[in-house]
Amino acid sequence: MGDCLCVRDIDRCAHRERRSGDGRDKGRSRCRSNRRERRRQFRRTSPHAGLAIGGSAAIAIGPTVRIQPELLFTEPRFGSSDFPLPLTVESRAFEVPVLLVKQFSTTRRTRPIVYAGPRFGFITSIAQTVGHTRSDISNEFRSVDVRVALGGGVEVAAGRGAVTIEGRANIGIRDVSKATDNTTRTQSIVGLFGVRF
Image (cartoon, rainbow, N blue to C red; front, side):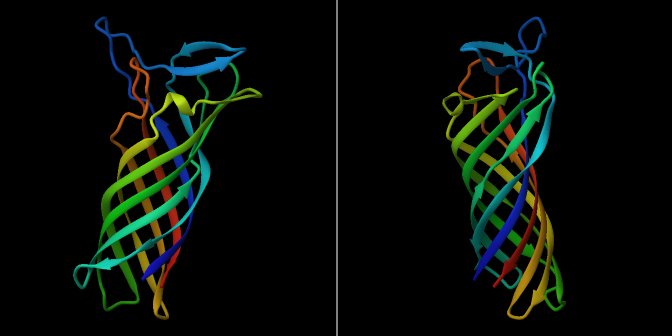
């Protein structure tokens, strides 16, 4: 049994800042302009909609419980107003969530579900645009991200399968920045629509 998912993924990159001994924030972001690298405080980010698509499988371990591994191709995006010029960041990744799914009301046509599990991301590229200048900053970040996925939704029976509508939060637990003076963990809120067959 597999799922065909068509997803709009809204990703926010959250920067958790370390503090120095005098209490000043140490969180920074790198911005390349005219071949000069500057560091500025990076506090305000806004999510941009990004497309994701993929599929999943279901491994039943009980009448109402299943393990659901997924494979997704995602394009997370976000912007920031911390700079004089507009700044946006776009990335591409393959993501592998492995979810434990609990289903309720198996005798009804509409069945609520809840789930949780790890989500592993394999980042293939990260590009930063400041004003009209675009640069590849992939080398400044680690290629593997680790998050925890939490969510729920409903499955509506349709023939031998079901239509699914879900909401999901992904919380980063690994620092993906290679820099020693800041930490970067990713977070996202995702809406999913799919067909299970």
